[in-house]
Length: 293
Image 1: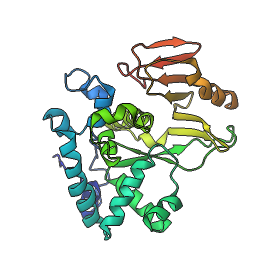
Image 2 (image 1 turned 180 degrees about the vertical axis):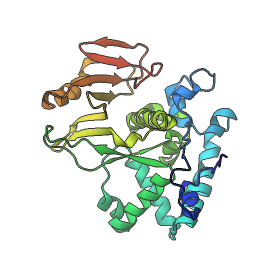
Image 3 (image 1 turned 45 degrees about the vertical axis):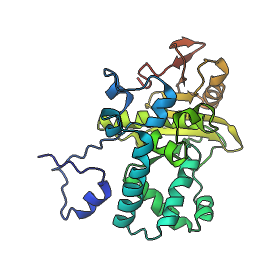
Image 4 (image 1 turned 135 degrees about the vertical axis):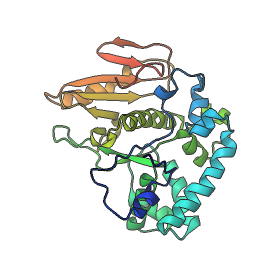
């Protein structure tokens, strides 16, 4: 038997009264991934439209206008259902909290700073983040903290599973706003990292167990956007929304490799350009390729 639960993951698990250990498998169906849409004509070629529209099934298969879909989604599911089923009582604070999370996407999460902005203590902020994570609105990416790499940031980064939802929370109400938006690069990075998480979930994996980022604790410009630990090799990714491939994009990947000692590193740059190629030990990948294979 199959139980299709909709988006109420936390509610479903809360109402199961008996242990199902050994008798149940849970498959998380996230918004569509690039790979799922590869052999269809449903995925937008324009990257701005792809980020702004997002990947929820109804938007993809029924051509619903994102400007209509997301405000209703936020008001019904994110604000009402989550609030009612988890005991969140202050709707205004919780709504502000979600939007502040959107503004801080792609950056290390500071509970105290978020709490100050919404007038809530760190424990409440942590609880609300867990709610958003359990309901597959956000996920967190841990910092790479191996001692062979000196001076690292210790706070996890926050990302959204869907960039359409993220864009709407950032009040990007039209796709034309994205081309010059100050957070366009962050939204592109969010789209790429969430793509890996979606592909890993689709394969029945646990993507948070071997994925990281690295940031120098004393210099925020020295950062590796995404790291996949494959035991024998670390796959390093720099993510750029630029349409032009530049060798300097990999500077931080070489810096990380230099400090990694004997750990083998594979250096990748994902960008929004027309070509995929390898140059000077750097694999440049565009959106038409298998980004993480």
